[in-house]
Image (tube, rainbow over all chains, first blue to last red; front, side):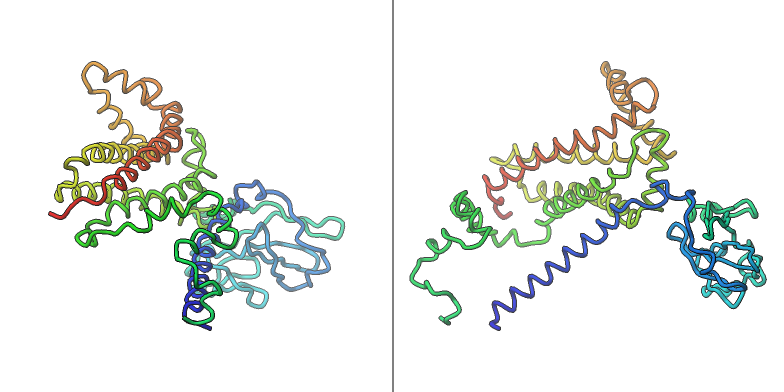
Length: 154
Length: 235
């Protein structure tokens, strides 16, 4: 490889990386956000009931947001995994929840068992139909959730 | 000369330039762009102008290009109606991916462009670059400064928040204080006696359609005259 062809390659690579660095955010920008396309609030199919083992929490995604399906002997509930403290994604910890950011803990029914969070994890409206779990909008009526938290779901 | 330099070393440089290979060369050959561009390539920047204070106008141009690109992107999501404007700006900042980034770039570049255009004007003034035969370019520069301020003024209203509303109220009140034609100016700017949906529509049209068209025409004239006159002499 000659010096001039090396430099041409170098210019080409730097140019390609620069163009990609501009194109990537532009394309992401143009992708319609779920919140604005009207998708939020629509009922989605979270999967077959058989895919949620009894007594366990199973990770699902509802409108691009992390959530967990709880199967308590055939009684299903869908908890949001957005922490009510500062919006981190809460981890499943046995049959309960624990936030990796500031160690807030939530009981299997979503209530706070350890701070700094003060508000319970909200649930999604859900029902089983034809062997599948259908998930509807989030239920934020259970506690005085702050505006930023509601914004996570709108 | 090594073998990789090409099999036709007998050609003179200008002959080699006239027959370029590749897709770009095809276009260049058909438009005779070599002759057109040769004059541009051969221009030498005078030594006294290789100084940072001569860069402000160019930086202002780069900022304008950034503002045009990010402005087009913001216009994808922005809605210029009183009901939707504020919410659409919030959506850009909170829901659209990289929206906060694009909007921040637009906002900061806008402020920086006003500063850079002004500093560029100071450079031209203190180096005496406005003197004959460059008076006409100074005048287009004054117009460009006013257009840049006009961009800032009209863009300020678009988020449709309290600050935008009252800034526009004060700004258009000032226009209304001009003797004789003041009321005409105020009504023309606001689209009525009060700030309303008509005002937002007018400012949006000015910001994204009228002012961009005017500034592009003035910029082309500005740059044509720089080429025509050359860089002004040293102090």
